[in-house]
Each structure stands twice: as C-alpha cells, then as structure tokens.
Length: 370
Image (cartoon, rainbow, N blue to C red; front, side, top):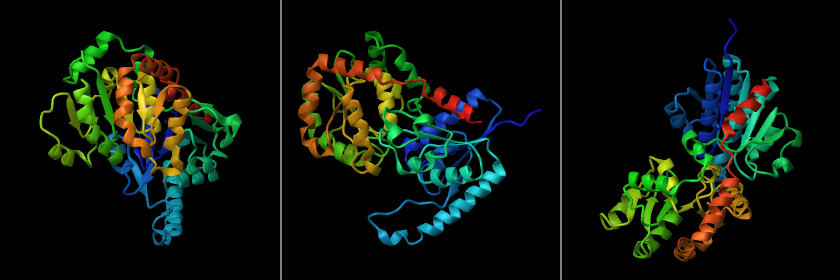
C-alpha cells in the first residue's frame, strides 16, 4: 500500500495568515482523506492556539520579526533566524512532506526557504493586493503562487501566478451562489434577535477589536439608533468590558458583542457593514455581497489593508474611509443607509469579486506541485 501524502503548512502571526492555511488544510483533507498534515508556526503567536483548536498538530519556531520601534530588541534576531532554520530542517527531515505550503507570516519564510533548498516542492498563497515581504522572498522558487487580486505579477513570476481568491468558510462561500432574498434576510434578522422591518448596520472590529473604530461608533451610535437603525457592534475582546460598563444597558436597537458567532446570519441580515480591510474579511464580504464602508488599519505591514480597500473601491464594491477621516463616520453611514440604490450597486459589484471556489482551486495547484 502506498504511503499517504504528507503536507506541511506554515503561516501565522495574524488570523489573516492562519485561517487561510487552516482552510487549505481542510481542503487537502477533503481531497485526500488519509493524508497527513502538520503546521509550523511562531512560538507565542496566535497560531499556536488556533491551529490545534482546528484539529492539526503544530510545531513552533523561535522566530520574530524586525522591530522598527525597538531596535535593541533586534540584537537576538540573527540567532533566532539561525535556530529557526535549523529547526525547520529537523522538521522537514522528520516529516518528509510531499509539498510545503506557505501563507505568509514570520514562520513561513524559514520553512519555505529550507524546503526549497532541500528540493521539496512549495506553494505560496498571498491574501492581499500588496504582496508581503515573506511571500515575495520565497516566491521565486515556488511551484505556484496563488493570489486573490489582479496585478500581482509585478512581484511574482507571471508564469506561476494564479488568481484563485482567498479561502473562506464553506458556509460563507455558499452565499455567493445567489443574492440573499427578502425572506432569508428576515429569517437571519430574527435569528439575531433583530426586527427585519428596520435597517441593520453591522460593525466588525475583528476578534481583538479596533480602538479607533470603536471610539467613532461610541460617539455616533445614539444618532444611528435615533434614525431607526439597528446596530450590531462587534467591538472585540479587548474593549467589550469597558464599553459594556459605559453604555446604557438594554438599549433598544443596539447589540454590543465581543464576538460574532454566526457570521452567515450577520452577513445575510446586514444592510451595511463597517469593517477593517483584512483580506479574509473582504473575501467574505464579496461572497455575501454585502455593501461595506471600509476603514483600513494603518498599523499593518506595508499598509496592505489600504491597498485591499482601494481595490474594492476601484471595483465599486465598497466605500473607503481612511482612519484619519473617522470624524465623518456618522454622516457617511446615515448617507449610505438612506441611499438604497447606492447600497444595491455596492452589493452587485461585491458579488463580481467573489471567488467562492478558492480553496478547491488552491488545492488543485498543490496537487500539480506534487
């Protein structure tokens, strides 16, 4: 009996690198039920918790990024890189993967670099419209580079760059099959404890939250609820307790939550979403066809969220509001909620950007790399 295929995946630091890697792993397991899958991550980063929770083993590397604000912290970086490379070599010799897949992040660079020098096929998945340093560095010797936006051939070898989209959760990908009907929206609203007859505004601040967005929403929500809007405000774990203490209890039309458990229902119910512009979130918004007002985080590497948001804005699929202009959030929201035709146009354009079969497409390129 032939030996089962082995796949090693590496990516992390943020959910934007981790969750695509987990989705790809799930896709590989669906394609090859008897395959063996392991992950490589960075010690102390969130992948060390999220990946085992998804059912996959992970090994941590003592890797870190360059600290621009704390230069003294970089003195040990060369030693960490050397230790990580040696650890990667040990992992590759032990596990003997057929293909190594990288989705970006600190641990991805040494893992793919060492795999390429050991003659192991590699595949890169880039989520953003502006390619990250890690993926640019390892792409030259990769068998395939799977991207979510047009124009990334300026960083990657054109003959091996393929537009597949970003992996999204299966339930969300299914939303791209057809626009949400009136009845489906009503059912989703009721499931969330909302009134389907009133407009619904959703604020997504990420799992940890976005302080600048939360501050702007805190200033604006009384005007929104006074205008008849229902507000589902996902403020993040870091800010929930303080906001819950400050806001009036049981305010009609306002739902404050640290996390959103049922994103499918939220997407179906939403008339407008305020969100950061992470690649994974944008891919989900496109599949759901949700009109969005995007506030890119200025605190991410190479300002890639602004590039992502600009790509959606150019396609007519979202409205871009820089964080420096958050004072305008109240007015912008009220204008969009009052303009049904504009929201319908944003929704239609968002659907054109949806690539719900991304996971399957990426798995196919991994198979070709074998």
